[in-house]
Image (cartoon, rainbow, N blue to C red):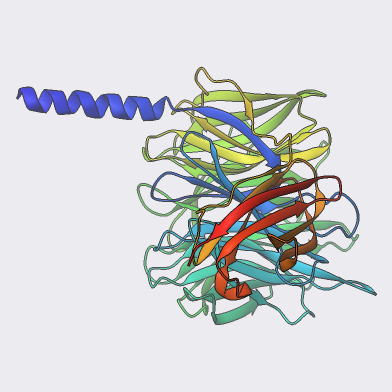
Length: 485
């Protein structure tokens, strides 16, 4: 009995410590749209680096953070032409604990920007790209809105292709299994979120555009169920012809069926805007709609069968709030809280999730001096950040780190950080000063942390001492390394 009491005490204290591990941290420049958590409770923030001026190159930006909010690594991926503009919008952890990111890419040509393609990449826990895939013929404009993993280890993405809803299914290697299109209106169809069905297939929420005889634009929302091959099993359409709707992520209800947020804007005068918590059965029939006391745009299900929703409010020119509200399944408010950001020109919350310790994590980007910076907030089960100061992990100096391992064979990693965006050249020289390898040649890099894996076989380097030099135009940094065979 004594042993059981001791074990219970230890478990209680461990859980209490985890619950009170709260933080609010700001990182480097980035537009963050997606958040994934691996089985070690480490966070992956995915998005894109900010574009400082028209047609500037941007890239898929990923930040890995430990469960205390400390930066582990930060990487930017710029596959293909440097004039590509890439935006990561969704992410998920696969069964092997790798990160799969989905987004879109288009390329600047002499006559303008190409139509958007789908881009997918898989990263391991070190941030190394395992594969990179692009889908699209350059004629259709694609957008991705949601990504899930199926029980057969495949992945399903939904979004939009020109004016049609789109489903893309891929395997673990990123190869396409099928790509299907669905048209509900000549003016435009979007698939916004997908969820595994209670039985066979998938449930998808979407909207389509309608134009009234007096040329006013509205939309309806619909539920579509497809089988494992993407073939339609049923479609249910909702909404008046004089309103506009948007839908949130879709979650399984604790007592069955599905739950999602529906935002409505009516055309009546005065126009009415409100948020409802919608409950739907497995056949797509809506059986309850509860208007919430607050407007909200993102939602997450909690382990106790309730829901947490979020919105943002402007307090003044430099103060912004993230507001959190917890509702039960009947739409009754259980609690509300807010998290304040100061020195913030603007604030966007992209993702909210519940953690295994019943805490809450939120991510997005906050504009500081007109540049977006990534943020991650870990709050307790009541939406409160406990006894913690805001930490800004903003890089202030150019630093070239010592390679690791050193001495090395057959490879080593060279890492550095940039305080401001720069054109970067990284070269290797022998002891007499002769250039023996160009690793990076005048590439545009945003402020952030970078790594380069130097392989002996790629550059056919003999044993001996070498110098590696980082040149940003305004800064010249050099370190010595030793290759030992």
